[in-house]
Length: 226
View 1 (cartoon, rainbow, N blue to C red):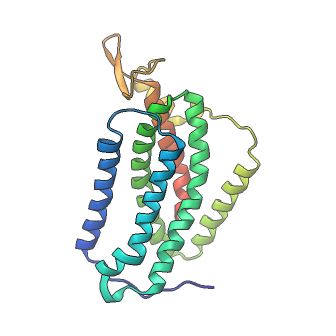
View 2: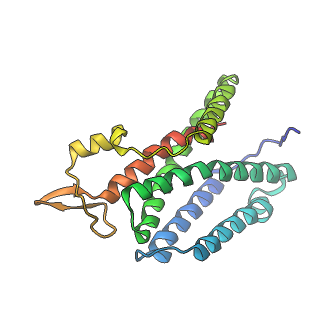
C-alpha cells in the first residue's frame, strides 16, 4: 500500500511554534527535571517514554489538525505516525552502541543523562541537516533513494553479524584530534566536560564520551534520509 497525502502549506508561524515547543521541552528536561545529576531508574525512564509518546500521538491526532486547519487529512496523520515509528525503530541501533560507549568509558549512571541530552541535541541538528540535504537530493535524483536504502540494509546486516565487537575510541578521528588540541584527564570531575589540569583547560572522560556519541550518531544519521 502506498501512503499519499495532499501537500500542506505550513506557515513560518507554525514552524516557529513547533521549534519553540521542542526547545522548551529540552530546557525543561535538563534545566528542571534533571537539574542535579542523578541516576534514572527503569520506572522513571518508562514513565517519560510513555509521556513523550503520548504527546507525539496527541500532536498527530489533535494538535496538528487544529494548527493546520482544513488542509489536514487522515492520510497526514498516517504519514506522521509512520515516520515516527520508523525513526523510533531506527533509534534502537543508537541505543545499543551508546550503551557500549558508556560501558567503555565507565560513565557513572548519574552522568549518563547529561551525555544523552547533549548527544541528542547534536543529533537533532545533524539529522535535520541530513534529512533536508537528502530530501533535496531525492527531489533531483530519485534513484539515489535506492542507494540510501541499500546503505541502510548494509548497516543493519553488519550490526546483526557484528558479534562482540568493542568500542575503539582511539580509532575515532575526532577523538584523536581532540586529544591533540586539549589535554585529557583520566578521572571524572563530576558532571563537567572540562576541568583544569596543571593550570590548563582539559577535557574529562565525559567529554570524550560525548564526542564519541556525537560522531557515532553522525554516521547513524544517514539512515534518517530514506
